[in-house]
Image (tube, rainbow, N blue to C red; front, side, top):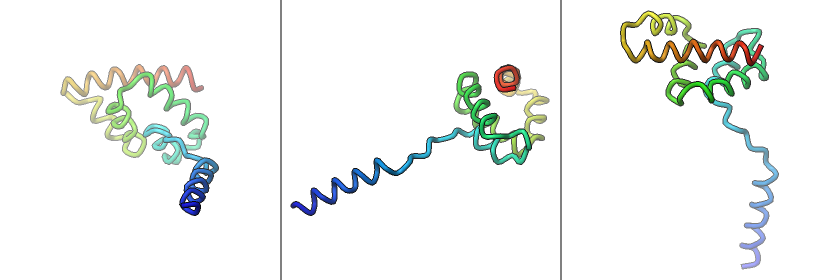
Length: 103
């Protein structure tokens, strides 16, 4: 029993001392892996913060794909689908907020 309690206590101490990586968010991860020179960690975190307050979770996932496939953005922009049009308006507003906030 003593060994069991000691093991639990040690496990608790280990888990407390291990740094936990915070989920960066899909926009932040896409930004950091985009290969763009301006994609600094600070810039990507800022863009993610603006995205969190501007876009829904599904919209952030969709927007993150634009970092790897810019042509996809063009397809969405030119789409005749109402949902794409609505998304594009929100995405443009997000982009403007990010430009103003993060530059």
